[in-house]
Image (cartoon, rainbow, N blue to C red; front, top):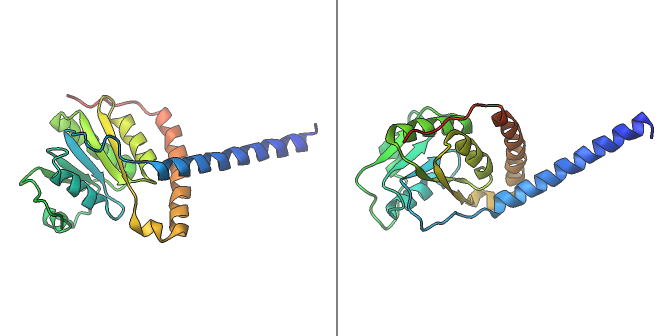
Length: 196
């Protein structure tokens, strides 16, 4: 086999592997469902960045799935009153215990901000709320940062994506590569352990 044929075969194999990985990633992400949806945790953690996430976190909070709600990645101009204004459910929200994190601008920073909040409170179980397409990377980031903390995945489907398949494809395409990149990067990063 000539060098050119060998190179072409290698390139074709890598392309097929990439395509298979993307298909598997997409099927996995879109098929995700909330993990043990009736289970209670010490806190609910919501990652902002897509419609419906905060509302789902508030819904879980109203159902007493956790006594604390932490929303990470909130815009600096957004107040707690703004967040509460998103609630239109039938049940009243608990009187306290919603914390907003204003420092994170990325999923990696979400994990860091959550780590700092959890460490200061000593929580060991959380329910993680984000979009289904985003959950694989978000769970990976938080699992790496929060060793020893039990994380229940709570992915949601965004209604706007059901009507826009082109946008959904673009998001999955982007998340696939971001997940591959971060998986590689995290392999070389030191592990933190949340204090109890």
